Length: 170
Ligand code: PNS
Image (cartoon, rainbow, N blue to C red):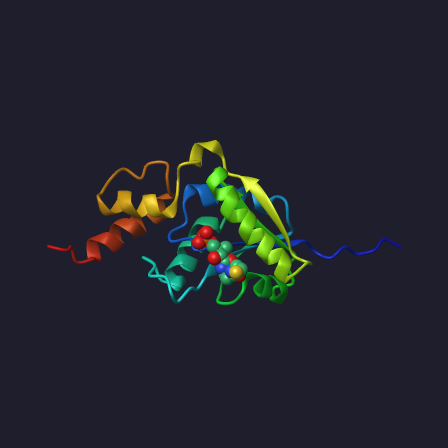
């Protein structure tokens, strides 16, 4: 009798403040490699994000709705503990540059040290988005620059609204 294989579940963690087309590219590609991909927003109390965790989750859900095996969640724990809790065994991270690689190598090595059962898999970001980050997207939006191919339309609208509602320093 054929043995039933356990579903392959991966976690794609990050701040996603906000999600960009670089993240979208990784989500689309990673979702094809696993039975389930959990996009997990870090709920980090020490950071001052532009969007709340709930807003970020809603925004990610709104732009990944067409991917049936993608789930959106948040966590406030060590990543390896969250991965265990979700019965996943893979962490997916995107790499844009050598600078990213150095940081990611440290993160993956630490996570391996903390839990040997968790594997980190890197995906090279589409070179089209190698310069892209949530920080530059926020800066461009703040100065009302063109967000063109940098974020999905829903995210552009949310950014415009966020900065419209925000009191400007004198
Ligand atoms: O999008 P980011 O900000 O580069 O994502 C960083 C993230 C969320 C992957 C990383 O900060 C993280 O995993 N934080 C949770 C706490 C943790 O497990 N830290 C690593 C071991 S010290």
